[in-house]
Length: 261
Image (cartoon, rainbow, N blue to C red):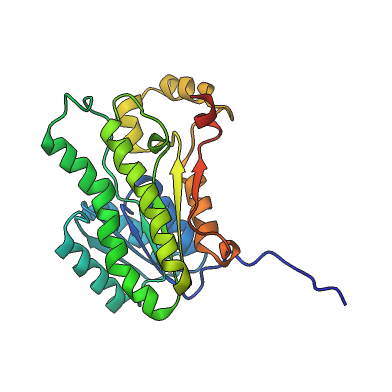
């Protein structure tokens, strides 16, 4: 008798997820999609108001949710964050490292140490701290899933985003190395590298005029600027059992933009 193989479910029922930078943009979309798939979700970020709005939307979906204002570049705050999530929602099954700050700025030689520290701490050090804090528990439990949100800026020396690209390239390497360290413990670690996605962070560079976004979209092979849900859909796949044979990957979600640049 032939064995019928089917695609494993995208359900996240019974799982606890933590999404850093979860108050707006890509992080918010990921948090909501995880909740729709059945997960209870904690969101962290530096601004309490957006976090509370996301928590309300998640609870309206019938899931449990908490908001934990946190500066994830600070070890003591990360440790407090992880402890609160574990105590109030349950031990973390899925960690999404999405917290970021804008990468635009002066060239490497025109920047200063403060700007370097600001970008590296938020976009890279925070990922190390969160993975370190959550990873030991995942190893003990013999299960877990970490998703890092990088950028196509990590794949090329983007003008005006050199330090940001360095931080995200470091995230890519961290993803691969951590995935190898944690694979024997049944913990998967992957990375998503978004292209041009319509968020507040990108709007700081593009501006608020519709024609600016239309012009950017015309340059992209698929003909449009990405939306946060485009990244959230990939994150949902990686978080689910449908991706249970996927680890150590940098998945570019950019509508072909990298190939054109």
